[in-house]
Length: 194
Image 1 (cartoon, helix red, strand yellow):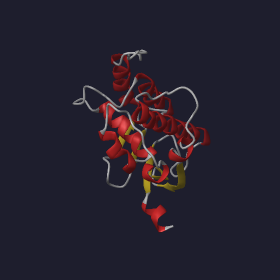
Image 2 (cartoon, one colour; image 1 turned 90 degrees about the horizontal axis):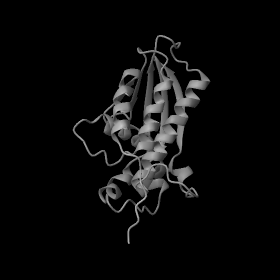
Image 3 (cartoon, one colour; image 1 turned 30 degrees about the horizontal axis):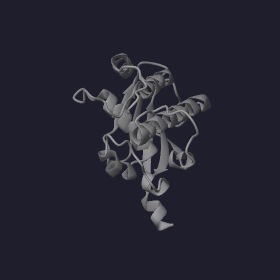
């Protein structure tokens, strides 16, 4: 059991809001947040494995276990959600990644679904990274869809993993930058390689 514990990383999501009683969150909001996190993590993983975030067809059997994120608790302090997730080294035994990005094979085993969620937003907001290799139009749309979680311009989500990644701060106003990014990414096209 000790080995399993070593591969679990804990995350905190803090909701700062004047509209939500401290230490509580409406069930519909937590369901929407969970669905958004899952969709973004799935897309970020799929783009690393196959180069496209919304891969069609039969879903690989390992995907559900690999994308498992558990709610560990809710604490008062604004509203603090404690999550935990296993690293992909624990859930994906044989990793075949996008051939055009071999560096992903080195990094992915240390990542979790939550870290991919955080990294997707960080890449979207990184003005120095003009290529955005780990984002496509469908994944950026999923990033943008989280905007409807926010009920006011004053609400803020702060996501952290207690140190190894920079904290991610999201406000409603941040999503205008994602809209600009979405407009700049071309639609995917089928290419035949012979």
